[in-house]
Image 1 (cartoon, rainbow, N blue to C red):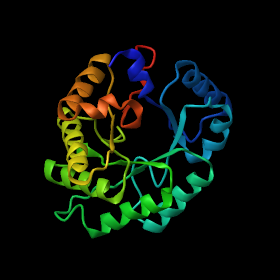
Image 2 (image 1 turned 60 degrees about the vertical axis):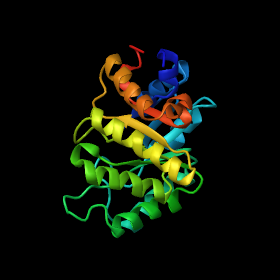
Image 3 (image 1 turned 90 degrees about the vertical axis):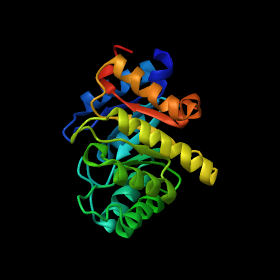
Image 4 (image 1 turned 135 degrees about the vertical axis):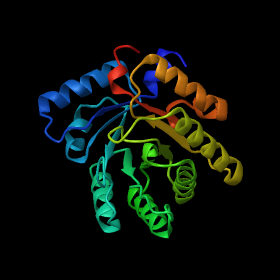
Length: 233
């Protein structure tokens, strides 16, 4: 991927509950001028941002708790439904990890189903907080999220650890495995601690090694959360 392709896969993010309209307007202006893949904000800023955002750039919000995800299914449904009502295109939701040996369990599956049902036709990206998970629960959570209908599995929020090379490879493999098993094409979002162009290149190559079709599909199946790199890209 060259710089232009990478920017088109970028989820450009401003997650600040206290952001002013001036800050949001400047943020959106940068997104519009660079033609990023999507912008991501908190739900309360969605309506204002939508009014400034150019056509063709997706509007995403985080809902249901960030960076710590809610464990109340009703609360998640309400938060996600409110985001849908605000007219967003995509929703990022944390599947809050647990240290219990049974994670992910039937309760986590029910939570994922609640996310999917509440999101309706919106693209759903499920954040797995991979820095907090060993390989087995990471794979299990990815498989469960994909089975529940997540459009993307996302590495992490970046607030509790960074995206590792292993996590990028594992999520790409699980998306490839899901397609082979069920014929459903899903996507990968890499985020958390991606600070240099070399980071982007290395992680993108790891996804490509597992399944080139993910990268080939561009922003429909591959996203990068690395807003600070926009100028470098």
